[in-house]
Length: 231
Image 1 (spheres, one colour):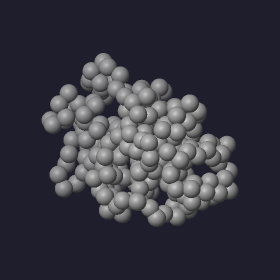
Image 2 (cartoon, one colour):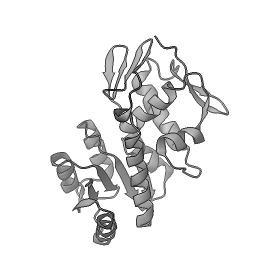
Image 3 (tube, helix red, strand yellow):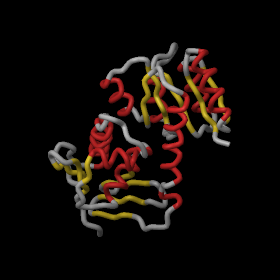
């Protein structure tokens, strides 16, 4: 049984999500503020975290940032009453996996969760294909590990999946829509900005100079491609 932590200061939201997730077979724990949510997330194992942005004690952004700094890679779905693109981008840059604006339907939350779990099921832990090695960059699929210039790079699950998808298709130009559908497993209407944010984060982590990238190149008017020959 998968275990979910919901952190939200609205009891009605907690009750609604707890009821619907429990019906679907999830084990649910809740927290009413950011401090309690962070404590629970750090002390217990969870398969998924639903995190409100506006929380007393410690906001969702800070909770998300702290979890990622502590190497907690639990998928995070952030909730907010604000429909602001900049907040979405900040949340994603901090390591959130997905973003939903209130009001929402429990069915949509469940669909987003299942999409993320499907991606996990398709991940390299179930694969037998070989690791990927390029000059200066190694992707060890059997260990979910990336090395750039001999140093291990810390990537979020989404960043890793996006890099792997690109690197497995070197030289192929992929549109933002293709990447969105492949990595996020469902379509965001008009939300391809999420791809740009993750590409930028990847470049900061694996490129020697993110302004003049060596591996992930922008193809203006089309999308991105991975440039590298296997060694």
